[in-house]
Image (cartoon, rainbow, N blue to C red; front, side):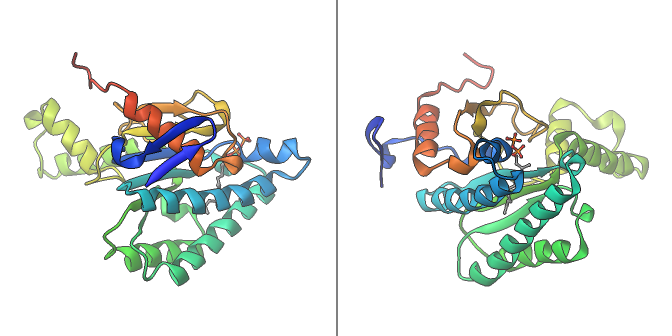
Length: 251
Ligand code: FPP
């Protein structure tokens, strides 16, 4: 497949070293709406459409894992009307995925504390995970009520319980075992760490996204606001990523 934008030479995707796992912080919905004199929720509506397009594109070009940051543990602090509208967009998407994704290859997974959502949304999340669990294509992780610190606290709590019950011995834990053990108790258990994390909207922050997993991720910051984000913008990030020299602390 050839990827092309007017600003760059045509590049054959077969020549590019694609990341196995991409993370995206879907940021800039509010500013997109404000620039147009619209309510913030209008930005989330278009942002949800962008998510549909970009996740489909990632699957089409052979990305194995995509993690999108849809709602953080801190986002509950937003005005109730905004939160409720975002919940409506989640509900719409989850219903649509249940209806349309049965014959798809994408596997949906949710990262975060799902107990924070209304019962109907929790049920839809579980049904989607179950329905798509047999799919063999891209794993699409949607981080909802997710926070990297909360995820680590959750993992540590589980490990502490195992230590207390004698299932693991505290003095047997060395660095390697501890790192593997912690990874095993994160929401992303069994998945490779992200190789590339894209943050649209020009903000230079991690915002509590995949804190542990992003230790060696390549960051790509883009000025484009999420609702305006296109396949070409992703292509630019992929091309840049393919040129990075990843050393993982080595030389
Ligand atoms: C960040 O932009 C975006 C959010 C907190 C919500 C993201 C939600 C969606 C994209 C819609 C639903 C998603 C799915 C999976 C169907 P912001 O509001 O912080 O933007 P700002 O920084 O410009 O204010």
